[in-house]
Length: 296
Image (cartoon, rainbow, N blue to C red; front, side):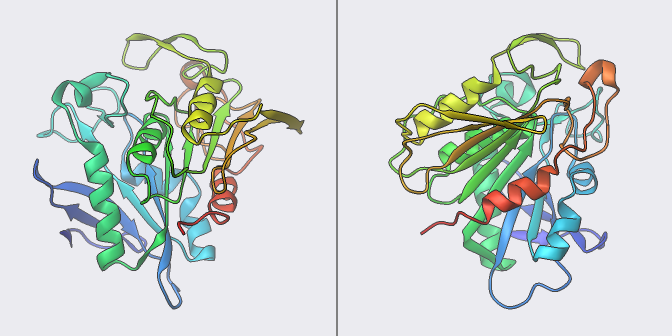
C-alpha cells in the first residue's frame, strides 16, 4: 500500500509504495478542481540523474494538469548508494530500462513491478481512471517507459517516451500500446543517426539511431505498412501505417532540440546536452495524443 509521508508541495505529496524489496517513493499531484469521477493519470519518469521534484518543476505538466484535471505521479528511481541523497554526478537515480547499464541492471531492480504497483495504488486509493493510465518519461525514463509499456500491456493506455531509446525488443503484442515518441535533432546524448556517446558520467556507449525505437514499437504493435513522413516548421513526423485498431505509433524529431524536455528549460550545459528549444510543448503534444486513447 502507499502512505503520505511528507508535507504538501504545491498540492504535491510524497507517497511510499511497499514492495517485497522495500518501499519505493513517488510524488503525487492532484489538480485543485478534480471534478467528478475517476481522473486521467500520467506517470512521468525522470531521466538518469534526475528526481521526481525536478521532473515536476521542469516539464510543463503541472500547469497543464491544473487546466485539464490530470492526476500526476512522479516516481523516484533508485540510486547507487541508497543511504546517501541523490546527486546528478556522484549518486544518480536511474531506471532499469532493459539496456543492461548501470547499478539498476547489476542489482536487478524491478522497476516494472514498481510502476505496476504504483498504477494499482493510484487506481485503488487516489481516484485514477484505470482506463486512462498514461506513461511518459525523459531519457533513461523514456527507455523505462518503453520497457514498462511492453510489460504492462492491458494496464497502460499509451506511452510517451522523450529522448530515450527503446532498448528492449518486445515480442509483438496481440493488444497494441499506442506510442508517441519525441527526439531532438541536435541531441548529442541520443543522436538521431546513432553513434558513440560520451555520457555525463564519463562512460562511452553506442546509441542506436532513434528510428530503431520507432521500428521496434511498430513491430510490437504489429503495424504492417511502410511509415509515412511529413515535415512542418522544423519538426519531422513519422507515422506508422497498417496498425491494428488502437495501435497508433508516431515519432517526432524536433530539428533544433538537444537533450532537454521539449519546451522546457536547459538543465544541462549545451556542450553536454545541446540546445534547448521552445519549438514544441512536449507536455501538450503528449496530452493531446493521450486523450485519443484509452483502454477498452
